[in-house]
Length: 598
Image (cartoon, rainbow, N blue to C red):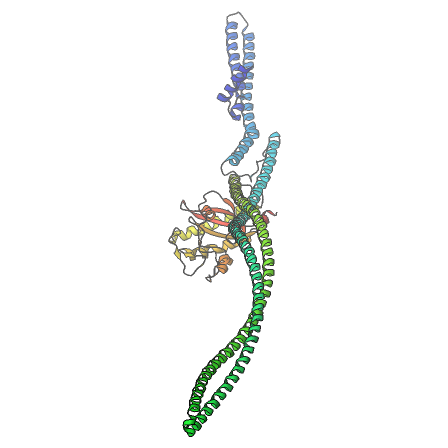
């Protein structure tokens, strides 16, 4: 059985590999009829030959021959009829079967080609099973268009969400980086605080120890001050007593001086008396000579007494001066002693207060030392947690980077899917309609720009001249103004005619944008914040997205990204070609959610 099947497949591949060949196999019937006609002629010739060899009536022989001729002619007519019918059937079946099948095949080949057109249905040429097959295929194609359109919408949404996620991830990554930096700063400050707290703790403990020593010394000093106060009190009492004694001595010395004065008076009187006695003895003559000697001795004694009393008086005066000075100094010393006693008593009171403050300070320092130790322990725990936060922040940042990479990969996969699906013209859905509108606008502008190129305008001029005072930077070329005059109106129409349209502009192969929509082609002010959203013509979009769009040579490129203005935009890029050279792309940006009605 397998041998017969293999033989059949071999014969079919070799001889009947098309429907026309299979239908042409009906001509075998004509061949069979022709063979039958040839066999009939051969048999007729044999019969006639045999009949001529037998004695037979000529009329009968002629009748047999006419019958044989009639049979031969009938076979010939049958063969010719078979030929005509087979030819008609082959043509008819080709018309009914091969022609629709070839039409469907060509349509499906167009669908299967690199730029497949799924917008065309298979032709319905018959009213039989082939029509049913074509209708079924058309329903299948409609379903495919719907599925591909849905996939395109989903991939656009994926790209949009990827861009939004990438923005959120970037923001989160920045926040995580800031958090890691803050955590690092907190950790460094915490480490410094730990060292400072340890130093403060040690210093506090040292101060507490010193305060305790000072407290002990203050207590000793207080005891000594109390002892000094007692001693000063005793000294003050002794000085008072000494002052009293000096005062008494002064009084007695004054009395002695009075007595000395009296003695001086007596001595003077004695001296006068001796003088009078001498005078009288001289008058008495020889009888008074003995008395004169006595008087002279008395006078000498009186003079000695006078000199002695003068010496005593001088000594007593000096002693009185010294006693008076001693008395005054004793009074001053006593006063100073009283003041010193008061000062020492106040100092003792202050020492007592200071000792109380020292005791309170010592207790507080002990509490502070304990609290600082607790704070040091707490800060160590905080430092450990901050270190974990820093490590977690770094891990989060790394995960964010991985997530960003995965999101970019996801967006790239979505764009790859779009590129694969973009090979097919759907004729279904808003996205395909937007692609078609962008392509039609490109075709119109390509014709106009080709005319400019033929007029001598160098569209391939890439000597960009910086316009001074612009921020963002703007440039001009030899064709910029003519380009804007020819293209800006169509760019505005395309943006306004697309649901969710945001912007339409043209870039060359290096990302230079000579023309943009009129509402974003305003005169620059030099203020970046003002000019960034409204001065987007004559700009150089040389970022990765811009360069990818500028270098696109496929039927279209669909990409979603975060603009420098902070918004998420999806755009369709269709290429320009002049004289077989790639020039750049038309970039049409839109809000995917509005375009797809999401």
